[in-house]
Amino acid sequence: MTIVVWTYAVYLSLSATITVWVAETLARHGRVFLIDVFHGNVAQADAVNRLLVVGFYLMNLAGVLFNLAFSGSVITVMDGVHFLSSKVGLVLTVLGAMHFFNLIVLSAIRRWSHQRKRTIP
Image: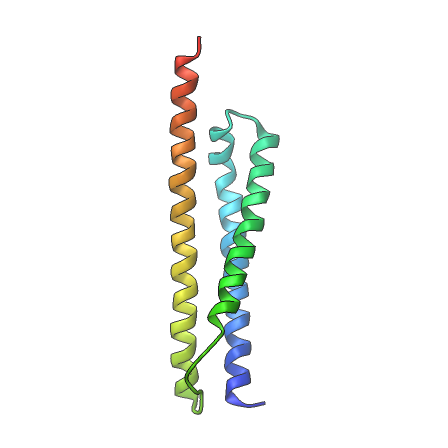
């Protein structure tokens, strides 16, 4: 196999592994937060948690595949390292941005929900 094939294989493996690890970590630790957002309705919180994980996988794996397009050439091992660092760095940036976006949206829902709960007699 050529350096290009090895580089793409390592990129896909790293990206998929990181995506799965982040999704599972967020789902496991975010469950408590979602239960609070949904006022103790565990079934609803778990359903939303699963839907968020599926959406997370779809968005990130699509981004990984779109990011796979590479206009340069990988000839040396150093070219492969540069490719991996830029591509995996972009994947990590997108994962972090999606995480903060989800936190902002869920925090807004939680705030709105708790305010609504206080105003309803």
